Image 1 (tube, rainbow, N blue to C red):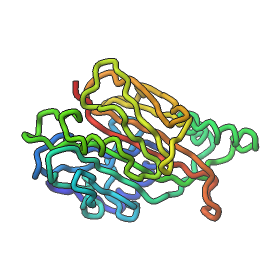
Image 2 (tube, helix red, strand yellow):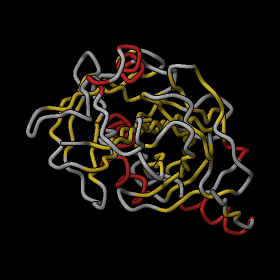
Image 3 (spheres, helix red, strand yellow):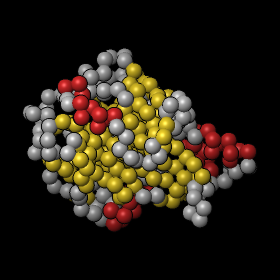
Length: 277
């Protein structure tokens, strides 16, 4: 697979575009045979289709692939698009994962308030209103957490629902992988009956996060299919209306660390998978 390297000016443009938007991993295919190579694109936007975000080594804290043989880095050259490539090692389930460094951004008041409301960040909205800061710019630092599921099948094409995989594969799909803000699926997305609920847990530093707004986007849509708050156990259940690729997204905002120069810190998390029916 050929990597396309982008010049520095393009990287800087994408850095500006990347603030305050969903960020997700998009494999070039979700099922392949062991030994096949898969490209993993970094994608940024407000729903689909988004824009490709080239590999920036300075932003990567963790960019890896986890399967039943363990974790290994996803390799790639600086500026590469796709951001990384990997070769599947063994039949079964694998998860591409990404964690970024924190970046700073200043957003003008109207844009910042709109973004807070759209992401369901009611606490910061209320605090800004109570302290007379709704008309002030949003000084924010942000970081990304992302996951995508890939399955290695015997022929590289046939669907492989989790129930047909080993118990270890299924445990991997449902096991937290240590991202700071993480969406963990509790329902098998590859064998979901039409109309059945799809359930996830949202974890912040490994603990359930209540009240987080979880949004879903079917591939090809900039409009959310569902917007559901997590309960006290960090769970949210939603309906996925059609087969295909899905993006699940959530954002958590806290006070920025002292000395960071920002007022707020946002953590973004996404989960991407292909739904078979």
